[in-house]
Structures are given as C-alpha cells and as structure tokens.
Amino acid sequence: MDTRQCLDIARASLEAFNARDWDRFKSLLAPNGVYDEVATGRRMTGRDEIVEAVRGWTTAFPDAEGTIERATATQDIVTCEITYRGTHRGDLSGPAGTIPPTGRSIATRCAQVMQMSDGLIVENCNYFDMLGMMQALGAIPAEGAREAGT
Image (cartoon, rainbow, N blue to C red):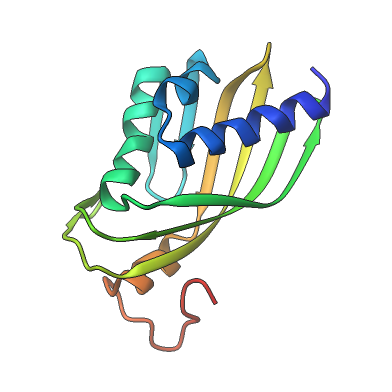
C-alpha cells in the first residue's frame, strides 16, 4: 500500500465514526485487528469488539465528532492528530466506574497511530488526553491545570 491509500483509510474510518456508519467502520478493520486505548487501558481484538467499544463513546457523547488536525503516513503506518468534540449526554463508563451525564461539552485531543495491511486497519493505538477530558467534565478539579480544549 502506498501512503495515500493508508491516509485515505484513516480518514474513511473517522468519517464512518462521524456518520455512525458502523458497517463502513467495521469494513475498514482487519478481522483480527487490535484497538488499544492507552488512556483507559482497554485493548480490544476483532471487528465486533472494536465497533462495540467505539460505539460506547457515542452513547456518552451522542454528538461526538472527530476532526483530523494533521496526518502523516510512512509505508503502512498512519499517525493522526485528532480533536474529538461532543456533549456529555449519556453515561460514560470507564476504568474508574461510570460518570453520569454532565451536559458539559468537551474538546479532547488525541493521537492515533494506525498500522495498515491489505487495505485494512490492523492495529490502532489511541492516545488521548484523559486528564483534560475528566477536567472538562468536572470529574476532577482543573485547579492549576489548563482547561481541556484551550
């Protein structure tokens, strides 16, 4: 695969997320693909498990939308800087329990490193600003720290 194809697949994945087109999203994943969500410690394997985990974010943030700020590719690796925005209107389940809806908006920055093979995402490591997101939701104090999204 060339770098342009890899970038197109990464963009298509985010577009499918934004559109809630889960069939399209799933079709871009390798059957035994891996999604590693570093901030939460969750690691999912397989299309169905990955789609279920990613859909969970849209339960907590029904209007969630990602924007690629910058992307680069080298052979079969794509790195994207993404800003996810949304309003916390549903339960957010995580490693420390469940946070009920706050009605607060977030703008959370992340970096995703994706490995591609045969036109599919084989592995996606997602590094996002959990601290900033928790501060924006009011789940932890923002004293002495920058506010998320600024």
